Length: 298
Image 1 (cartoon, rainbow, N blue to C red):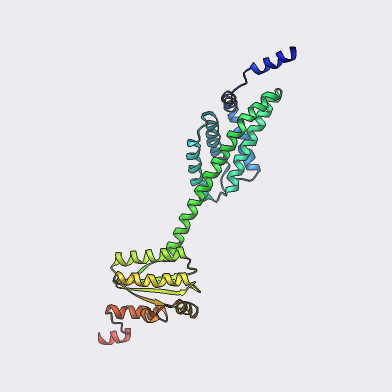
Image 2 (tube, helix red, strand yellow):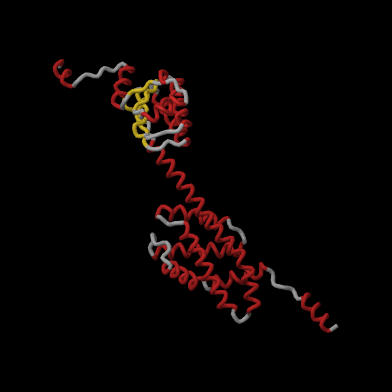
């Protein structure tokens, strides 16, 4: 009976709630703020993370991350931390900071804080275990929140850079009134082919172009899907009132067009870009004369 009574008494002892433990943890981290953030910043430098940033910048960011970290532990909400992670990513990604560095500094902070907890509660092993049980799930979620925020921002930056590169690699140039040139260089994948068509049609409408020269001298090869897209681009341009002249066809691309059944008699092709421009000017009614002849006339 005595043993049973002792067991019942133990069950009736209320255990500390996770919320209470986290409040105690947050109080400890705020009291040790100066020491712990300095230790963390030093560990970041020693681990050679964030090498694109100065020590002053690392310390400033460490201070902000630390405060947001503690706030997330205190409130249990992550909106402010997510916003800060996005803001941080916007600032450090252009500096060349990599994903593994961001994950590394967050894990270092977790290690620094865990060591502090061991030092604080080493004399009370049961209390230490309860504190860690309350801390670790929140710490894991914080680490995931920061890492995911950085990865998402990095992916957004990469998409924007790819878009900018595509814009630069497929420029629609106005040579003269009503005449556009679209020089294409490199590999044409389906996504770039769609963007090419969109840019060209937008340029035709904006500039009220009547003739477009598409030069594909710099395209080594294209598959049947992209070749079909080129044909559709020519047809769409014709619907907008512009004649398309394709220049720089390689034997391989010409063979691809024949294999997919394109009637080349319906596609205006010229050997090279210079010849294409001359043909375009003829269609527009321009007359090109040698400089010597012009001087003699004058």
